[in-house]
Length: 103
Image (cartoon, rainbow, N blue to C red; front, side):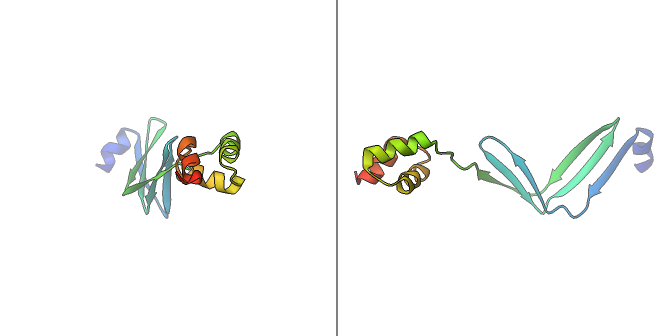
């Protein structure tokens, strides 16, 4: 097998001491803890194969300052309380206002 790979100009190497692999996306990150990573080099191109269990970590919701101000004005809440409510409601302004208004 190794001889055939060598004839094809193909090399495989297991990367040592890999602690974590993270694939970042717009919606969140795929995290592989204790992954096994194999690099395959063929015709000048390196391909990586990741073996292991992935967990998905959703991206943190970014709360625009304008949304915080709007919730503050509508509820007379502090900036901290408005931002907390928006974070808890994944940025839903109406729901944050209702939450702070006690509705």
